[in-house]
Image (tube, rainbow, N blue to C red):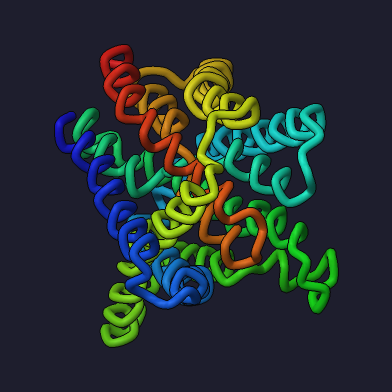
Length: 308
């Protein structure tokens, strides 16, 4: 459990570095945009390919069909719940897109992986990767489409194959094909993609820290109704929904506990990267990611105690 908490603190170390370099003007103004472009178009797709290829087998994919279906149902329900709430709140289109996405997706891998491995051991990891595959697929399709659609970039039509098949989703598809057919990339290519994929988390967190610095300098980091509702979505509604759906289909014991814990993770960090990349309320998204990660320092031990 201590290692799980340490992984959350590591997040704040990177956020602090991004915050410091931005606040003290030690890097050019365009740096966060360069980093976000690198993550969205290069690093994240590379990470998707290598992580799925290395962690999934045809047997695991077949055995996980029911869990994959229930996890997908959880994502879809959360997405439409988020859209309903943001509609009631009458948020502006850009903020609404970020709200819908952050309400839906959790930080399944970077914070979820060490916590699941510490709390439940290696036996819990296959269920984590099942949730991760669904989260990754939907985030880089539905999530990326939702945020890109709110962009002012008029060169891309409101509905297009390019918006749906984002680089991240293409990486997911390639990874699934490799895992499904038990294929391996050439060593040189796999090593290159692994190094590129390793850039995803640090660059993402540096951008979030930079956006956080800009938000604080403008006095934007205050608790609002929409932020409270996002936190309720992350730490109350999402785990309760996972508990209800998985229990309904007869899932119990270790799988149920892992899926509940995964559902209680903070906001997906790369939401802020997508928002920055498409110029859609990047600072607002960074605030939500930072706030939810801070709160998770308290909610993670709480859920671990209950589930154990």
